Length: 471
Image 1 (cartoon, rainbow, N blue to C red):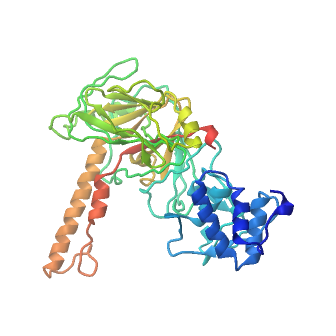
Image 2 (cartoon, one colour):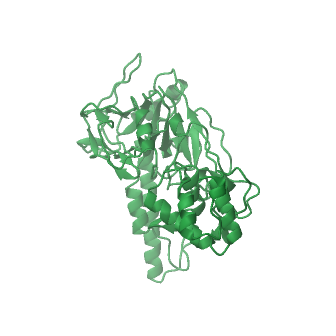
Image 3 (cartoon, one colour):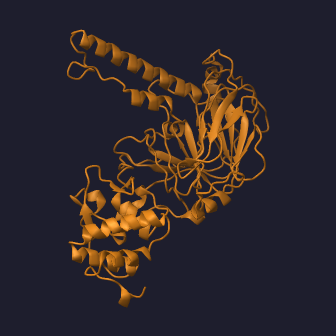
């Protein structure tokens, strides 16, 4: 539609909606897009100057300066359209500018007086009053980390850089994403695992919803003997009752984490740590991990279970029938698959290799030609981060540890002790005893059923494939 035929605020809502629909990017369905645009136009009908600003901005692709286009801020800051809730500035930025946009990638321009981050009573939804700040070549659209600490932002960490900012903004409010790199290392895997001191951070908790990425999440379990791909071979006994779960999300992302190898002197200093008694004397489970593959938060295919007899499993993008030690994502079909997901899947290639060591530690090797992005509380702790505030970039050929069972076991013991102490304090308060220092108003803090269930369902790590084509 030419500029001369562009509607104005005096035209009928239907004409304005039809014109604005012609400029949508196609990331959302036509029905959802129409509902979102209709809702916005109706809200702006009484503010003709702002409606004209919106029409000008959209129909000229931001070629001309435009004013703020505002709507009332809701209590939780989110807007509901067609049964879906989201941040309003993100909804319309996806609609007219970046269909694969993630909510954390927007930053308002200086002239915007009602930007979402400014916490005003009104929110500017002019897509051209925001800039996208995601790093080139990294597509984290749809990546959501629920295990973040309040007031801290999501960090994408390349595992060779351990410099970290002291304070980070909340990932829920939308801020820039940083990277921690894990380049491939020429040294062979360490003989011992790093020792974790008593004051451990809570175990990994993460959830991902992807719009153009594929996410598998993994939980390690037990195993038997494993040999390394290096000049010398070593075997580790595995006897453990912990069963891992792997969840895959496909929007072009596979999320996995692996730790950095430790220097050789570490063995001589902590030699005794390698011979600690096993965590459990129960027989190993039949399956040491389960892998589920998701596209746009919808599981595709059945959950893939890895038997304990296969300590090494490969997850790739090919179409060969999956065996006990190989899960091929290329053979999985989905009638709702988008073009963005198709492009991401083409770059999975050789994928990643997961290896279970010892009683249940998990290592990841990136076999793909593209880096993978991993969310792992173990790596967060190794990097000195709060759990859940970093995503780690694992380069091709890199081999890194992503889950430590002994560390997780300590954390579970600490949480159990905390829960027991809280329950005892609460019982004492109910009995009329003097409340302890940890209680509030005579009632000790307790862990809710929802929180306890969330703790039980935690996933140790996730892996995401991101490609340059999805920038």
